[in-house]
Each structure stands twice: as C-alpha cells, then as structure tokens.
Image (cartoon, rainbow, N blue to C red; front, side, top):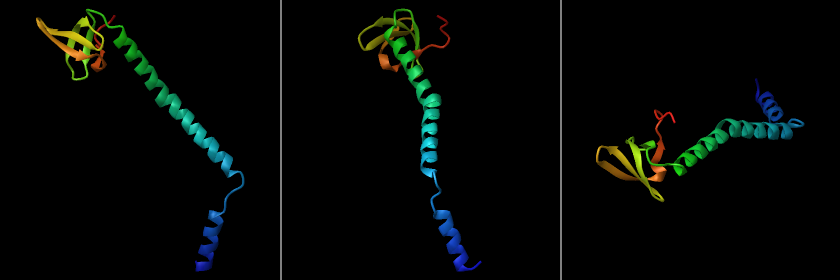
Amino acid sequence: MNILTIFLLQANAAAPKAGGGYSMLIVLVLIFVVMWLFMIRPQKKKQKELDEFRNNLKRGDKVITVGGIYGTVDEVKENKILIEIDKDVKIFVDKSSLVKDPSDNK
C-alpha cells in the first residue's frame, strides 16, 4: 500500500455517517435505562428496607453490627441502641451500624 491509499482509507473512515447522531443518543439512553433497572433501583429498595428495619427496632430484636457483633436489642434511644451481647454484657452502638440478623426468622 502506498501513502495515498492509506490517507484515503483514513479519510473515508473519519467521515461521519448519516443519521449517526440519533443512534448514539439511543444507545446512551438504553445504557442508562439498563443501569437504572439492574443497579440503582435494587440498591434503593435494599436501602429503604434497611432504614425501615432500623426505625422499627424494639427490645428483643436480634441484630448484627457492621463490625460483626451479634446481639439482642435491650434499649432503643434516639440514635443509640443498647445491645446485650452476652449475659450482663451490654454495649451502646450507633443505630446506623446495625443490620438485621439473617437467622432471625420473624
């Protein structure tokens, strides 16, 4: 191949195709919709369930802290929860550091 052929091939490849703008926009919109359906929406649903769980905590509920401490709710305050982790062993934890105990089948 000579230099003129290479130049003509590059010029032809760089030329915009007719109607390419709308197809690119449609592809971007479809990518956003798929990301929303499979990533953002399920995460929002999971976060809503976790917030609901934390707001409805009551004495006797089994919980796990994000640090991996298993315990039972003994007292609920505004932003703090008193958790009994063993007989006569209680600790205060922040309400946002709790998750539901999966072995609790309530």
